[in-house]
Amino acid sequence: MPDSKPLLQVSALCKSFRRSGPGQHRYMAVNDVSLILQTGQVLAVVGESGSGKSTLARTIVGLLKADSGRVEFEGRDITHLRGAAWRRLRRRMQIVFQDPAAALNPRHSVRQALVEPLRAHAMDTPQSTGEQVLVALETVGLDRELLNCFPHELSGGQRQRVALARALILKPRLLLADEVVSALDVSVQARILNLLMDLKCKLGISLLFISHDLASVHFIADRVVVMYLGRVVESGSSTQVLSGPAHPYTRALLQAVPGVDPARRFTLYPEVNQALAGDPATMGCAYHTICPHALAVCRKKAPPSVTVGDTGALHRVSCRLFSGDHNTA
Image (cartoon, rainbow, N blue to C red; front, top):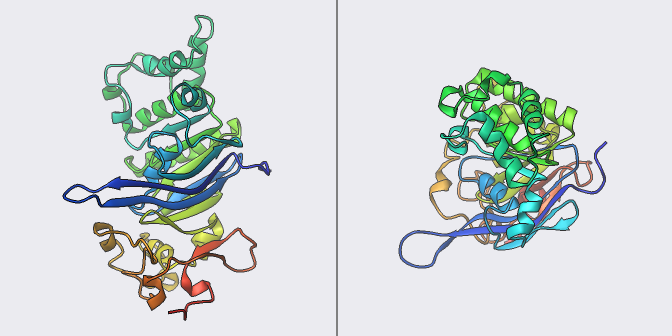
């Protein structure tokens, strides 16, 4: 059973960027996002490209500075940590990126790539370093014969395993996986997902899984958070969100999954990507510009987050259709 105290708690987190061109217009990449990840869970954050998933992950681990909001890890506010304090914390919170070829130094062998984080955190000793490197390789299913290989000599799946080994060698409590399978072949994706599930079970690692692939999310996630244009529009257990989606955007995402039984399909919204080119709504619902159910109030007021069904606070959706005040002007 997961601990009652969250391992990671994000509250009202915001991160904006200044748009290029004249003026001081800013784009809210992450807009008032809150989520909770319990120890031992896999929490998936899903949405299209441009929804703010990767910005959220990078803000959580301190690679980007939040505009406002709060990030708590292990019960401690880490929102404003900097310098040496962040370096000490980062050992327990690691991130793996989408493109391992870009994340790995092309001039470093596999051995050097794995020793590097140990040295950065003063964990390298002559007695233990070699053993730790071999254990990390074994953990991700790689042979020791690859130790002297360089990234260009490895397959995409092998490079991603090296990136995972580099993160896991520090024995973190939380692993953020940012689109770690999206650049891989389908067969390799399955092996990496199985590996992540094994690591969760064997090492007790909690996982924040960033993805736009709902099939992967359905396989690996305990809970799901759906983002659209920087905002959370729906959250709940994997079964609740993927089998009984409430928000029109979540339904559109599921509609776009290949191979869905036509008898179970939701109404298709062919313009689901269109709004990504424009400014997100700052006052109303971010989805109102393309939602076929949009009401007048949706253009003026952001919808509250409400509970769906008899599930307590487990399944929540931000949509006026469920708030009970959809007739408000």
